[in-house]
Length: 543
Image 1 (cartoon, rainbow, N blue to C red):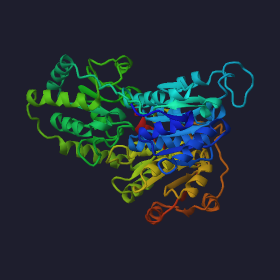
Image 2: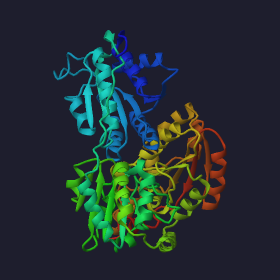
Image 3: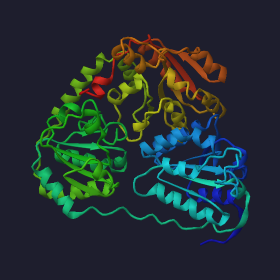
Image 4: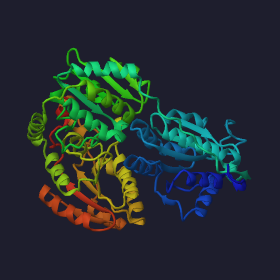
């Protein structure tokens, strides 16, 4: 324990954040949080404060920061409408297992729950936050701040990673008392793998002829072990989105969600590591007869959502290592299937070349983007195609919104990715519809000289809605067409660089130029409305 010092609650929170390694906070100041913002001013040489133009931008930038680094992404907002504006980002962080911390205010402590109509009052804000996060709590006095912040970081570092929130009443932020910020935080170690479960998993894998490994974001820290398992079992490694790059798709064993479908049909044992198994049970749906399922997951509730034949509740790295240690003595060396895997993937690459114009542009982006550069997808025709058509080589470099699939998350998230990774190229691909959800953050990009390259594919429509209305609703088009600005002039009006690329060849030239300059760049790619090939046969092959 350290020495107590008289601090405001805002100061105690700020210093506690410093103790836990926070170096960047996104947000918008407001009356309820003034005392916290002033405390951040005192820490301005240690914590960057990035001011946004909308609370949703604050939340998504924190999400991008967290998702691309594994470190806690932190944002602050006013209560009530500020919390609600950023709630979509909390939903995304929850669904995609990202360590995001929301710090917000509330009305004065003596008015909470009384329904007096105080500025930004909600009937029960803490209940709303608890419904959107893994854990949320209120700070009622300065002396509580270090312990509450410490518990937030314990929650962010243990079990299944999901967002958390802290609220502080307006009057409490400025209250002062002697505070000891040196409160220790103990993170319990993950449970050890059950030896009996490991033995049962080994017995299944010993007899498997066509095993498959599928990984989700829960396996990001276990890449070396997963690749070793793949080589030992001679098994393909698949992922829908969150686990892409854990095993690089430039190795024989790394398969995209599309390339993995054909080997799935012959699979006899599925080994899921840190994954909800969404790919097999919600996307592919066709389950091979007699397939056995082994799951390694830190979240015990997953064992009841998709019940496995063998469930191992532990950390992905610990579980994969225990399985490796047991298999290494129990499993005879298997003949290499690398040539077979390479051939399967090569054939899939040929199969998807009909998904145009999306694949033409994605091939160019992959060619120009360095191996460790970041690609941030979006709910768009190019974004959908990227889930199976854009090869991913390293974990965290394919940044996705997870199952929430919030339209418009991509550009704002990508700004957070670039802030967290200033020395790495970051490209955001977005549709015209999604980009306009967060267009105001171009001002943030210019203000802080954030060197993000954003490619806006402009088809003057919500492309999926338009396709569905044409194909399933007799061409009854309503609400699917869009009126857009000149995106190049729009970027320039904010002070960003703007370019136009009408073909993949032009995009390559412009993209090389964009990565070579500093500051934000927007590239508009015009697309003919309603002409993009459907990506869904490769994402949902049985629909």
